[in-house]
Length: 95
Image (cartoon, rainbow, N blue to C red; front, top):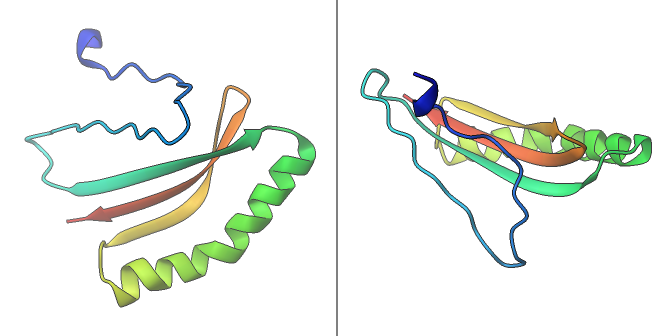
């Protein structure tokens, strides 16, 4: 039902603030965490810098979180862009 959908939108959080929410689904017993670190507004230069950063940290992130610490079956570090703002994102999902 549409009334059950999470209202996705960008938020301006005060400095030092954390925002977290939990979503439960009885049909799927997977566990996951998704972390967004907002970087800066989208410009050509900022897009290139963020993509370059992700290129350098993706493999070490995977190696540390999946191989060494064995935190999840799926580990991914990438970019997320929405409404002119871009973020660095890390996803860890386990069975």
